[in-house]
Every structure is written in structure tokens, then in C-alpha cells.
Amino acid sequence: MKSDGELMDILNAYDLTGSYRAAAELCGCSHHTVKRAVDDRAAGLAPAVRRARLIDDYLPHIEGWVVDTKGKIRADKAHEKLVALGYTGNERTTRRAVAEMKAQWRVGNTRVHRPWVTEPGLWVQYDFGDGPVVDGRKVVLLVAWLAWCRYRVVIALHDRTAPSVFAGLDRVFRILGGAPSYVLTDNEKTVTTGHIAGVPIRNRQAVSFVRYYGVTVLTCEPADPATKGGVENAVKLAKSDIVPTDTNLLDAYETFGDVVAACEQFMGEINDREHRTTGRRPIEMLAAERTRLHPIPDLPHTTGLGVTRQVPRNTPMISFDHCQYSVPAMLLGQSVWVRHHPATDEVIVCALDDGGPAEVARHRRTSRGTPAIDDAHFPDHEPKIPGDYRIRARNADDHAFLAIGEGAGLWLKEAAAVGTERMREKMRHAVSLAALHTTSDVDWALGHAAVHGRFATGDLDSILAAKDLDPTRHQASENTSLAQGTKGWNMLGNNTIDGTDLDEEETR
Image (tube, rainbow, N blue to C red; front, side):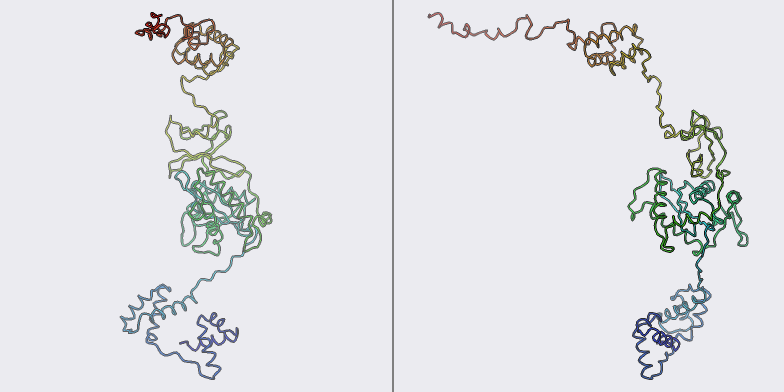
């Protein structure tokens, strides 16, 4: 049964709406309750007064427990305490009473969030998300959100160390076309080393980085969705579209470059879509906000990238801690930055491109005398094996001989390996035979001579003759042989002459 105050609220809601169901929805009760209260008032009856309950005497205890636990006490535990105090009612009544007290406590203790109204060119927020797994390593997604225009930037990183994060932020600024006044993020070690009396202590590397770009880094309050909810929602969207799951039917990524391409595709699609809050496309609003962003230096901040090394002009290898590491061949003659990652015992090499600093190579730390080489850094390299000589014609005789075919090259290698004498004369003889016979036949004969090790004078002619290719020699066959065959032996034992019986011949 409703209290007097609840009945008055119900009647006022009905007077305002003129509908039982609308008033019931406003007051959180059944429309039958509204109808009963309206009918009683129309009949001139006094509002029904709620009967006293057994639990009314214990409500102050319940209220104290709710306040002490900040609205987290469980109804079953409250019922156990009430039973110990002498309460004889059932647990259902206790649950209702605890729910009422919790609702009243939340009215005065609920944190109210005021919408965060931003200004153009003032705020950019960034956060991290777990990316896809490539070669057994999880990629990190750096997601930035320009607050006023809602423009989202997603950068794929190999790790969350300070150099990688700062390099990613540099690329974010260059994609946005400038830097805002403030950068808001979480209290990570790359930005905040600790707190004293609630005051965050900034990382010196982060201070050096933000001073270089003329921005101020701030860290958000814990559990404050009003200021950092935008970037957290951007992280959720990026992970749902980029990371392969059972719901988006994406295939696994083979290389890190595939993840980078997927991030660029996601940025192009999400920023070209109308935002439901602003009703405009973020890429259009970014063009207007860029006028409020301040320019950034042409050269990125490279203090945390490591020490500089100059790549030689003919060998894509650099030295670091007396060891050699390969870099992509396109960096010949350029400067790179190299550093050691102590957590993974890896050596990381970075270089500059149009979008800022980017990681170009990552090797396991090696030892002196054992260079770390990635075959992908040498795309046009052909491995050289001792004894596997490359045949190249140096004069006209060489060209004529090698033009016969692959058998000629094989014969040259094998004949040279055993120290064959008068090779030049034999090569010229092979060329003359190729003019008499077909080139393919001579090439076949040279190949067989190389396989069977026949490099003496006349061996090539002999092989050609064995193939029935010498027109000056005649060989016997079954049709031209002078030798007597065995067909005459078939007449042995037969008394016939040319198939005629001898007895018949005598009688004649």
C-alpha cells in the first residue's frame, strides 16, 4: 500500500498527463494503482493509509547499515542481522525495505556527471587497446581522439614503451595537422611516475616531449567518463573493427604492415561517417579545427629513440654495442636511431619518414662477430655458394659456345673442374658441330659428356655417332645385313622342296 506522499505524487501525475499508464510510468507503479487512487478521490473517499509493518521498527537499523556500506549491503545479510535483533518477519519484506533504503541513499549520494563542453584546438585524448597477434606478439593500438571534432586516429605500435608512445604521438600530431593545447591520458609510467598527496609526478621524458611540441600533458581522474569517455569509446570501436574475433570474421594478420593498413582503412571509414552527436563528418570538422591547432616542428622529437647511427652507402648494416644489425636497404646513406629494449632483450631501429619516426627493424640482441641479419632487408641479394660459379661470356668464342644451350654451360663447369686440356679448341669444335647438326643435338651431347665425364678429344663425336647423327658412317641393320639368318633352319625335318612332297615328285 502506498504512503500519503506516494498517493499525492500519483494523483499529481495523473492530473498532468490525464492517462493512467503515463502516470504509472512516471511514478513507477501499476496503472491499476493509479486508477484506484483516482477512483477513490472521485468518490470522495479518504486515501488509504498504509498499515504498519513489522519491519518499520527496524528501518533505522537498515538505514544505518546502508549508509555504513555505501549502499552495498546485501539483503540476505541484513535479514540475518535483523533476525538476531528479534525480527520475526520474512526475508521478502526485508529485501523490499533494503531496496527502498538503497534507493533513498543513492538520491543524495549519486555522482552527477556534467557534459564536457570542449573548445576547438584545445584537447586531444589518447589511450591504448590490445591489438591483433602477429608472429606470436600482441600489437598495441594507440588511439587518439580530438575532442571537439571527434576525429579518431589509430596507430599500431610494437610495444608501450616511452619511445614507441612518443613516436606514435608525433605521428598523431602530423595526421591532425598540428598540436592542441592539452593532451589528456591515463596515469601510466610513461607519463606519471607516482603520486604524492594526490598530486601526480610527471616523467621527465614526458615533460621533455611535451615541451618540444608546446603542449601540456594532463592525467585524468580515475573513473571519470565525462572527460575521457570519448577516447575509451574510440578504443572499443577500433578493437571491434581491427582485431580478428568470432563476430567480425576477420582473418589473422600475417605481417605488421597488414595491421598498419587495417588501421588506416579504419580511420578513413570512421572519420568519413556522420557523427550522431554533431551531425557532421569528423573529417569536415577537422578542417575547421586545424586553424586552431598550433604548428609542430619539422623534425620530430628523437631524444627517446636512442643513439644515432649512419647507414653505409653500400651495406645496410649498422653497429650497436660492438655488434652488427641489418636495416632495410632503402635506408642506405641515411641516419637511424637504435636503442636496446631491456624488457625483451631486443634492439630496435627507428628512422624518419613523411609521417614522423617509425620503427623499421627489430632484432634479438646478438653477440660480437655474429651479425643479426634479416633476409627481407636484402631483396635483390643472391646467395653465393663457393664453387657455384656464375657463367658469363667474355668474348665471341664464349658467346658462340654458350649459345648452344644449358648442356654447354654444364660441360664447361665439369671440364674445368677436372682440368681438361685444350678446352678452347674443343669448344670451337663443338660450335662447328652445331653448324653441321642441330643445336639441340649438340647441346644434348655436351650434357651427356659432362654427366659421364667424357672430355677427351673425339668424345663428343663419339656421343653424336652413338645417337646415329654421323652421316659419314654406315651401320648394319636387319634389312641390310649380309649375315645368314636362322630362317632356313625352319625347313629341317620337312621332306618338301618349295612346299612340294618328295614322294609325289618321284612318281612323276
